[in-house]
Structure formats: structure tokens, C-alpha cells
Image (cartoon, rainbow, N blue to C red):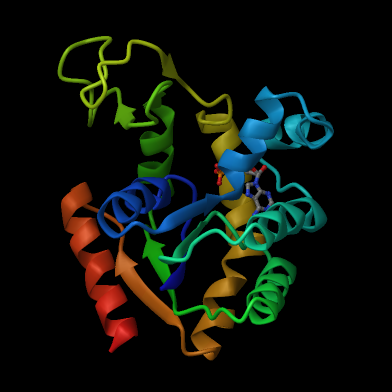
Length: 219
Ligand code: AMP
């Protein structure tokens, strides 16, 4: 299945995408991860987007559509693709539809992870950190590592915090979500592809809701 995880920053899209990758062998295409990788390797795209990402605004449609096109051209995702953080605008949604069609692929479902509480989202991203080795996601208050300074999953000892995971930048990121991305809820509802789930709660409970939505879309 090819699916989109749609939701505001901090809704848990990346966390649920990691679970689907591990459990179903799907491929996660996260434009945020691709842009961060471009920045750390110092490519020209990376240099172009650094300031915009740090401000919490959206980078241009052209750049992110190009990144997704490259992956689809490379033929990724024979076991299904999870689009995570893409599309984020109506123009990106149109472009994705055209790209999938050109590859003979279809979009099976769009899962909207709803959390209508901005304070909860700000809290979630403010304490977020990841293992620099395996990418496991932790939180200072709600999900610390079992042993301080050591990743539960791989034993790594280097951790990363995103510069845009702070309360101030979150205001801009949330505004971008409500203004530019939330219209996609109506767009995919009209296509009959939208499944909305409650994004609040324990990771495994949310994962069960994601599975339920996928099963409903597959029926
Ligand atoms: P994310 O990791 O999905 O939260 O994305 C981090 C940042 O990368 C966003 O705040 C944007 O600046 C940029 N970004 C990621 N994906 C997109 C996209 N599909 N469209 C525009 N900007 C994006």
C-alpha cells in the first residue's frame, strides 16, 4: 500500500512511519529527513533550505517535489511507500498524484493523525531528541532512555536535537500546517481516501489505530 501520514508537527508521523517500516517492510519517504540530510552533506539544496527550515516555514514546492520524484524514479517502495511530511501544499498533492500515475502506482490511503491541541504539540516537540546512530525517538519527560545517555535500541551514546524543535519555531510550523497543509484534509476527503484517527495516547495504541485505518482502506 502507498499511504500518506498527514498531521501537524509533533503528531507522531515519524514514529508511526518507523513502526510500519519495521513491521511491514514499507519505505518511509520523509522530505524533512531528506532536507536535513542535504543540509548535513552541504549540497546546494541543503544550503538553500537551511534558513527557511530553521524559521519553521515551508521550503518551495519545486524542491520537495524534486526530492520525491528522484526517489520514485529510483524505484523505491515495492512493498509500499509511506509519505511522511509530504505533501504539505495543494500543489504538492497534485504533483504527487501525477508522479504516482506516471509510475503506474496508486495512493491507497491518507491517514490524518489528529491532535487539536497546540500546547500538547509544543510540549511533544520541545523535549524531543533522537539517537544519532539508529534514529530512535525519545522525549525528556514522556520517553527518556532507560539508562541515561544510552539508546535503548542500539546502545548508541550520541543524541541529536532538531534546531526547529522549540516553542518559538513551533508557532510558525503550526501556522504553516493550518494555512497550507490542512486544506489537504478536504482534498483527500473528496477523493475518498481520508481516514482520520486520534493521534493522542500511547505509541502502541496509536499504532493500532493506524493499522485499523489501513485495514479499512484495504477492504
Ligand atoms: P519535518 O521534519 O517534516 O518536520 O520538516 C522539517 C522542515 O523541513 C519543515 O519545517 C519545512 O521547512 C521543511 N519541509 C519538510 N517537508 C516539506 C514539504 N513537503 N514542503 C515544504 N517544506 C518541507
